[in-house]
Length: 270
Length: 361
Ligand SMILES: Cc1ncc(C[n+]2csc(CCOP(=O)(O)OP(=O)(O)O)c2C)c(N)n1
Image (cartoon, rainbow over the protein chains, first blue to last red):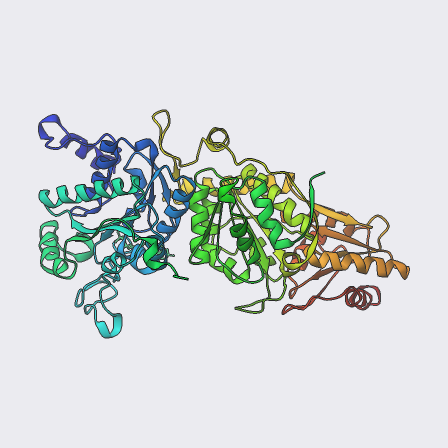
């Protein structure tokens, strides 16, 4: 590791820099694999927090998954949740400190398998939090097993012959389901495979934090992501595979853009 | 003298939580403790002290909400009954690992499984020997009266913050449901942000200010040598609990030839047994462990050389009896008597067991 750190430091010379690092990004060497989307999304979150000037008011909730160490990289206070429980942890934080900014950050296994109940109910309560959802269609951290979002036919270490609907059911479009919930204010699906997509995702994250400030309900940002190691593809091929296979199943764009539902529409009449 | 009221044990938990300045309660309904959240919701403390009360979607969510809220350095609690506590095991382990204070109330019912809604003490092992994974300990308080349901909420928060550790109030359906006179503390304000900064400012995750490093609430550590050091720090804390916070009550033990050991409502019943036995001329005493963890092993060891035997009475198949045997270490006889499945023995039944298992035997 020290040699690697030195090599990276050697690259970080003024003449090589094309994009300034947010001062909120700590200098730790990221543990993410080459081509992974997690690091890019971390950076965007760091930039948004910096630009909004809310470092001293923000608490991040990291998941169990590859982003378990998210707390190492962004210079804010963090709370490391158990697998799938980040929305409950974020709820607890936000309820006792409603004036702070709270966001959760989760992978697809964390958010859409083991933590489905916590995810649904946090959004249904319209918790005034930001939820970031990294959908890479696989369990990265544990070595590439099937995720709820794994595509039909996709090979993973627990679907060695491809995901089979008779055995494994269907890819879960949880974001579409969450967009139906009255507590959701803003639900969007983005990606970070090129500069244009990165800019859009940053805008979406910024908007999500602004919605939190206005206490409009839950702001949910899915980022369709790559997992080169899990998919066993090069970073470049991963982007291609994602565009060809993930985007048709998980189309990009806003699913809900507004505020949570009016309570009157749901009240008893008598 | 504080305000006196006739109250149910479960209602008192809610009243004491509000009055001691608790910041938040998260819970999920389950018999025989649903009155805790019902009372809180009826009292609307968010309009008074500013306490947050939220019904979660499950006990898993409840405990993880507690975990999140406790990371702010505030005083947070939950309550449940046996099956719900099993679901909380994950979060309790995380909180012990991350060294967060909180109060968890378990108003036990009979198990295993869905079991029965009738009273039980069958979660003694779960509370004192683990429940969740890893080498952690709770501090476990066993109330035997409605007054203690009240007092242990207040004491529970003090101990939880003294040790930065979850405290469990291990009650049972009897103390949860019965009504007794209780003296309530006067309303205390919740801690201000300044007080929280003073008490928990070195670790709480409240937003990183320019003058300090970021705070990370976590139980994770990939470096084994640091993880072992973390474990040793926890163990040192538990050793300190054993030194400074063992609590128990002794009743008529001075001249006793036989001692009953019982906790919670079982101890209330056994108090009557002591009277019955003494009226028959048999010198019986009672030791009531108040902290089940740390267990009052010293006082039991002391009496082990003085008495002819101990009878452990509990509403389970014999769980605490093993801790008594360890404390007694073979120096005298240790017998167990208990009922299960939600059956609460009466004092005469206990007296008969004493006669049959210890005195006659
Ligand atoms: C209770 C529990 N079950 C299982 C695990 C093992 N585990 C760790 S991460 C993970 C899956 C993570 O996948 P995902 O949420 O998609 O995130 P990614 O690693 O792909 O970013 C699993 C199953 C665990 N830590 N805790």
